[in-house]
Image (cartoon, helix red, strand yellow):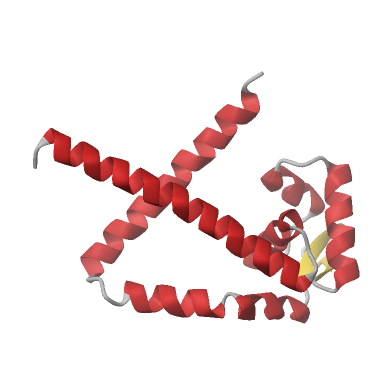
Length: 154
């Protein structure tokens, strides 16, 4: 493959990745609006749900928000019935924010995406899936480094 062809393929890949990022943002906006949350609260709920429960401090750190802002996020999620504060079973001094059963309603809204992604993935070999998974994992690391770089710039 010529260098010009490779550069064209890289350019195409970057354009598709940029479009995909916008598509995911639009999907999150639609889901958030459907359940009466804002996108930041939906992202917080996703982190809470993936981990099964987090402390307010952990959530603040992962979302790069102040503890005061996180209190507002948790209050909104609690008032909407998607999360609740609970005692940490391993440390009685700590409080966890955990998802409620109502959170499953959000997962249902992503059902067609999940089904479509599984059908698409089924078309690839094990080796191709391994490569794609590696690429996405590495891409996420690139994004995280970019976020860190932006946040540390003045």
